[in-house]
Length: 409
Picture 1: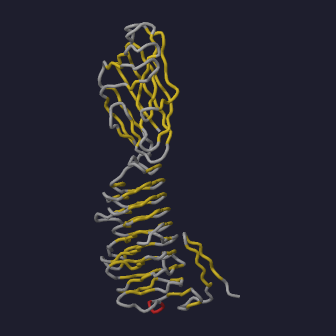
Picture 2: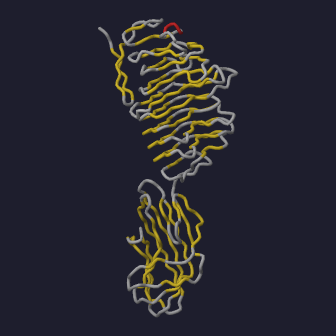
Picture 3: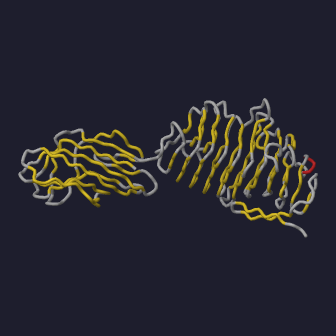
């Protein structure tokens, strides 16, 4: 009875007949490859695979100055340290255009300084690229190749448990829904190379890079070029060992990015800010009893992570997801009337008062007071908060002598 091997890929469900032989044979949809002669004949330097086949590679196959057009076929090996292709072509050894890509347990060896591992392109935005466990791109001994290669487009790119030992790393560009790198090891980067680089015309909705190791001296870990548009990104539990410039073009507080536990030099993405009042005698007028007025005067910003201050006494949230924040404020003031009562509060988006406020009462004329406010507020992208005060007994102004305003995630 014929047995069938089912492979469930990301976005692809493929069935291949299980092999009954190994050496240089083709059984059903599986083609076993031990030498160049087991592949389709090259045409103008390109070996075009059959789209409905899974090519099982046994040993390191030298394809010389040829490239392989995947054409929708799958490529797989058994031993990721031995099974794969050695090439000396100018450009990428493995290539594809507007098809799904599936590789696992497959090594690609770059044999010249002009040779790189991959050039995978999907301009349709509907295809899936899967570089699964055991895939690697390495430079041949005493050779500095052109790098891991380039990925352009695709709906989803999933790179899991790969090993790259090249002069330069992976380049990512084009429009993409999701890019994921997990449990990968990047080493050998030198001469200005970058581990993972998102080029200027990248437009990517979601990026997740986690538990990936960048181990090399100097150079750059992850780079986002000016002009690239990233909606949301997350870095977590990555390791940078010896890398001089871990991140280039973005940081822990770039809007849309969340970073946690990436080691020394990369802060966790916890928003926080601190501003204080520069002026020391600021009068606050009130339009009516129990109506809040924003505290005016010149403020100075000491810290502004995930926030901007486009006006005095204001924090504008630049993050892209709803988050809860602790707010701590201290205001010193001088009462202009007897038996006064004042409440310090937070005004959200210029209209919504965040409860609770903090109140002091029974204040004599000319007396100095201090009001401490501790509260919480939820902020979404573009929301802003300001510190405000109200007179609970009259419209008589109050003089603000000091203000400290702090927010933290």
